[in-house]
Structures are given as structure tokens and as C-alpha cells.
Length: 343
Ligand code: NAD
Ligand code: 89V
Image 1: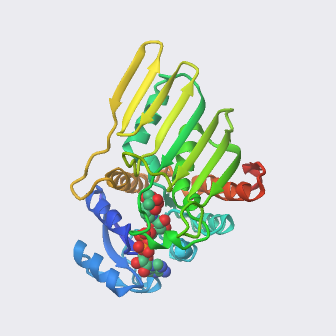
Image 2 (image 1 turned 30 degrees about the vertical axis):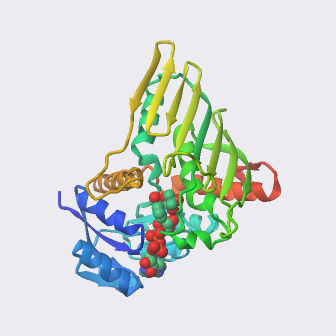
């Protein structure tokens, strides 16, 4: 089958990982790039040898010649760019967070549905090697039926130097990082019926919350905790590892720092190294995230070529994004939020 031709919009900090990922993906290649900042356009264009360069996305769509678009801009431009893709009947990948509001995200899904084009949210954390290993261990039945879980990301890593906008918004950790952790909780323990949340801002130099603790009631009766922090200084910095504890009817599972997966049941305890691969273009400690970028992009190419729905389609990701909205609403009101009222 011929390669899919892609265009990428937004040549900033994270897009460099996406461009490396596309170089590795089988069945797809980037043929055009766009950034409204000519400097970023030049840097990424030269680094990856892309000659078709645009400062205006509308002009790039008008010129055409690509089968999908990869939107790697920050959140405020997502709706307009996804709607532009829908208007041009071009399948779209959109970075997380989906949109500034749930209403925007729903409108984006509706626009793509009306145009009959696939929309995938670049929610890559569930594609990390250790998270996939946890999913496989549960699917094997090794610990029976899960009834409790904890999904934890606690770090003191300076994310603001690479992504200064993270310090500026009224919302921070739930919208930027907790969104991944909530998606992992859904991926591992299923959809969520209700939640309650508490937040805190510890770092006085930022505007948003940098600590959140969220209690989830899953539809299948399991209970879990999602706890995230960028204000936690530890002896060995775990960034960007998500640590997981799951208790099941026949055993338990622990994904601990250093990418070790421990599964315990009546037959004993098995420890497995589930560390991500350090891809040739990747660098520690980001390699876990970088490998998942390649994995989700390969999944997109395979799904588009075989006309299959993606794991993190727009429709699926509305259910993760609703948890973000619910967590902020619960933290403000101190009430439990029923997720069904948002969807
Ligand atoms: P960034 O600010 O470094 O880059 C964004 C780029 O988009 C900038 O160069 C900007 O000029 C360009 N841009 C913005 N609006 C545009 C428009 N309408 N047309 C053309 N270009 C436009 O931001 P970043 O840190 O690279 O983050 C981008 C997105 O990636 C964010 O949504 C962020 O949350 C997400 N992100 C995801 C992960 C992950 O693991 N999935 C990690 C980091 C960042
Ligand atoms: O994955 C992300 O969305 C990043 C980071 C890991 C720094 O939170 O913004």
C-alpha cells in the first residue's frame, strides 16, 4: 500500500518528538509543515528536511496533497484547526488537551462525524510500554477482577523551562498532566461514573494548581485514586513515570519506580522489567513518553490504512476530558460530580 502523506501544524517544543516519531512510523510520512512562527518553521523544516512550509494553515489545506493532519499546537487553536480539517475532509490527529472546554470538544467530534473523517486525540500515555504491560497482566487474569487502584504521578521536575505556558494558565496539573493519568485510570479500570477531587497550589511562581487528589468510582464498581503533583521533591526524581497499584480478587499488581512490574497471586510473585526502549533519537528521562509518541502514531497509520477506529478517538477522549472538567468542578464545589451529567 502507498504511504499516507501527512501535514503537521505547530512546530514547537513537543512537535520535534512527533516529527522523529513520523520518521520511524511504517506507512506514513510528513510532507508539509505549518507554524505561524517563521523561526520554528525554519528550525523544524531544516532539521527534518521538509520543503513544503506554511505560516498559514488555511493556505496549506488549500494547496492540499496530504491524507491527514497532525495538530501539535497548544489548546486554544485546537477547535479552529480541527474544524478546518473537517471542512477539508482531512482526517485529523489533535494533541491533548482536547479543547479549552468540553463544549468545544463535543463540537469538534460533531464536526468530524458530520464530515465522516476520523479524529484521534494524541493521548499517548496509555501507549507507554509499562502501561501496556499492566494492561496485558490484567488481561491475562493473573490477579482476577480488579476492585481497587491507584494511579500516581508525583514529581519535582521543572516542566516550566521547556513549556513556559504551563506556569501561566489558571489551570495547570489536571489539565496538562492529570489528563494523562485519568486516561490511564479509564484504560486500566474502565469508564468512570463519578468523582470527587481536591487541589492545591504549592509553587507560588505559577498560576494554576500543581497538586491534585481525585477519587474515582468506576462503572464496574472498582474504586481508584488518581494523585498527581509537580511539587514533590524526592531522593530519586521519578519524572515522567506513572506508578500503579491494583488489587484484584486473586492477587495484586505494582508498577514501581524504575519500571518494575510486580505481580503477586496464589502461585507466588513475579517481577518483570517493563522499561521503555531508548529510541535512537530519544533522551532520558523523556524516552518513556517519546516511545509512546511513536507507538500512538504507528497506531494512527495502521488504523487509517485499515479503516479502524483508534483507541483514543475523539468520542473516546470526550470521556477522559469530562473527568478533567469534573475534577475542576468538584475541587471548586467540594461535591461529587456524576460524569453522566457532563456527557
Ligand atoms: P509550543 O508552544 O512549544 O508549540 C506550539 C507551536 O504551535 C508554536 O510554535 C506556535 O507558534 C504554533 N501555533 C500555535 N497556534 C498555531 C496556529 N493556529 N497555526 C500554526 N501554528 C500555530 O507548545 P508545546 O509544548 O509543543 O505543546 C503543544 C501541545 O502538545 C500542547 O497541547 C501540549 O499540551 C501538548 N503536549 C503533549 C505532550 C504529550 O506527551 N502528549 C507533551 C508535551 C506537550
Ligand atoms: O505530557 C505532557 O503533556 C507534558 C508533561 C509531561 C510535561 O506534563 O506537558
